[in-house]
Image (cartoon, rainbow, N blue to C red; front, side, top):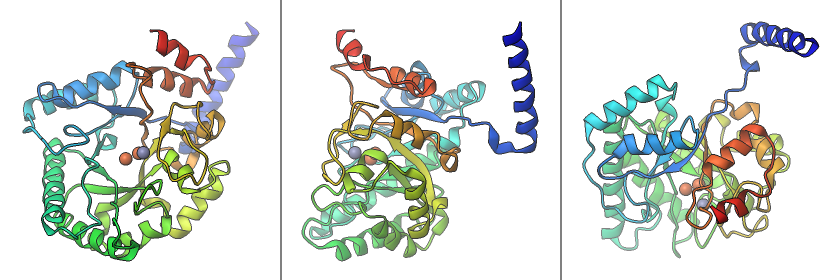
Length: 318
Ligand code: FE
Ligand code: FE
Ligand code: ZN
């Protein structure tokens, strides 16, 4: 009796607060990367996301490691959009990731550089056809040309691709593996300032990459303030939530399941529930355990804010 009264009172206060301070209710937008298959397309991606209890998702329009792509079926897209409406999924926050073999930073081989530009143009067109708003892109690797040359090439390519684009390209914060550009916020800023179509450029943070690049995630508010000074928080439209197999500053980029890596559960929970990122989709790109996707369990753990140390062993044995 006492308990239920208490519940009623706190619900009442929550309602009042919700009306007065609209920011007081935290609506978690969370999902993972999912497949996108030739036959089922967006509908298959959505079904996979729903099976993990996600309310958003990210997909590659084909295999991430190649540029083989099939035509988009508008009827399937329409059907998927209807279901999303029913399920209260905000489609404007569903993300596409560009294949990672695209490299806009290196123009040593003209043909490869032009291929990357043209492929990305087609990818933007596919996103437009799907009605997707955000396309995540790895800025690229300069492969010996040097950071400044690499940045120049990225700017040139993006200005061509974004000229009449309805899609916003989100540059991902990188781990700094090899000659990757974008492991330093200042490099992202250098690119962004030179993009003519400012409404179509943004950033996707990645927790594993930022850790591996050398940023301290334990005081995330401080890091967000720093990012705001250097780049501007308004540019962030997505965050990849991954733990890391390696220490801070390792420049390795190997994702680990939530709570099983060097970043740790509590730090990741703090990031996920940070008020400044509350409207931004959180996407898991953590590894499968043997052949089992971990996302349903990881999302449950995140919603409960309670680490499940048996998650991996359970998945191994299932
Ligand atoms: Fe990525
Ligand atoms: Fe990522
Ligand atoms: Zn990564």
